Image 1 (cartoon, rainbow, N blue to C red):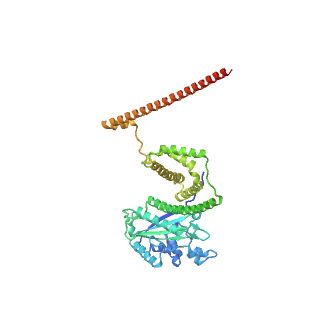
Image 2 (tube, rainbow, N blue to C red):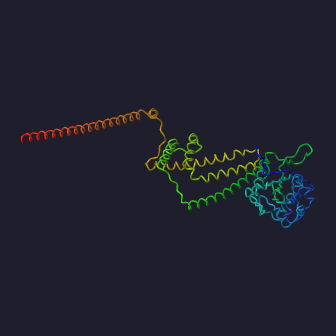
Image 3 (cartoon, rainbow, N blue to C red):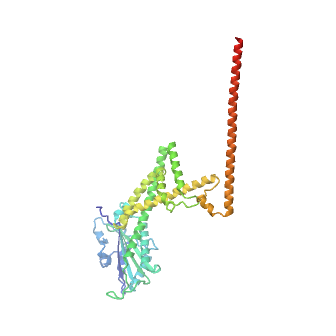
Amino acid sequence: MSEKTSPAINLISDFKVGSSKGESYKKFINYISKEKNKKDVKKTDIKDNLFDKYLDYMSVDKLKKKQGYNKENVKKRTTMSFNSEHEFIEEKEMSRLKDKFQEANKKNHVMYQDVVSFDNQFLKDNHLFNESLDKLDEPKIKKATRRMINQMIKDNKMDKNHTFWCANIHYDTDNIHIHIATSEEKNTRTTIKEGKFKGQYKGKRTSKTLRNMKSTFANSINQDIGLMKEFDELKKEMKDNVKEKIKSRKYNSYSIKSILKQKKDLDDLVEKLPPLNETWSYNSKKIKPIQSEIDQYIDNYVSQFYSESKKRVDEILDQQTRNYKRLYGENSKYNDYKKNKKDRLKSDIGNAFLKELKAIEKEKQNKKGKLQKPREKPYNKNIKQMNNRERQKSVRNFKQAITGIRQSLYQLSRNTARKRNNYIHDIERQKLERNIEKNLKEQEDHMSI
């Protein structure tokens, strides 16, 4: 049984309906922003806040009781507010935002209160938080927050032009977390028709909306982790490879036998591919039946040139699978993540291979002075599609070709026979001359006796 993994990201969501007295929102907005604006956070503000019941918030007062308390260190534990328009909301803009929240409160509009909290170990493992420097990669966290709120506005069918929000990143507990407050200038919520809360605006969000909020945030973080890790690792790999090549001066060499084998395998593969005037796509209907042969050729003759990268890809995907499990939970399809990514990688490599191979084959055809034509159907089927004149012409040309071949064969036969007869005559003549010389010599010898 596998060990249960704690989630990397948690989302806690609630809402509050405004009050005509105009005080309901004020405490929460002060709560998430006051400390950075160098005002004291009162214990009563925190206690009165709705979030106090489910957040283990370490207040400034509690920090003051800790040994070695430092006022400046406490101030940096809460960042300046940010939203969709501002990376850092200055005091003047914050005052304007508070007025907007106050106005929405008086109109009894809904204020959504969300908290995103992290497992700090996950942040450290993925280089998003440097504990020794007490430094969080805030731009990536803020980007994920903005994407999440945009998704919430869309799913919750709110008017993006009349929705406003602000957020703060808090470092002051064991888990870094973000407080977010969102409300509307013009209400888009339906009114509750009956029951205890009859007449109030409906603030509850659907479970689908909340799921999408969390997954949007997680997707953004996961995306940035991948880009950052990929860049760092590829950079290091490239540098190491260059050093190794220069140092060792290694070159790949092959025997004649292996070269011939590779050429035969490639020729066999090309024969099975579609004509050059058709698309060569790894996942196309015509190529799917020979995908395994393409993969086999790549594994046998190409993959050796990126074996180190291939090994690193596996390591990266293993890490990403662990991240996927922690970001999206035990019930997510994290086990399929690596397989899906490798299948996509195989497809991309296959397409790159086919593209280069097709270019080579086209170049070969151009050198021969002709492009490969579409494969024709059997001759007899094409003959049936011809009209009478074309058919007669084709038959006449065929007969003429046969006649020409017969004449050539006959002439070749005659020439061969003539040469053969001449050769035999030469042999017989030479034999006769030798016999005559022999007889003359015998007669001379007899007369001398």
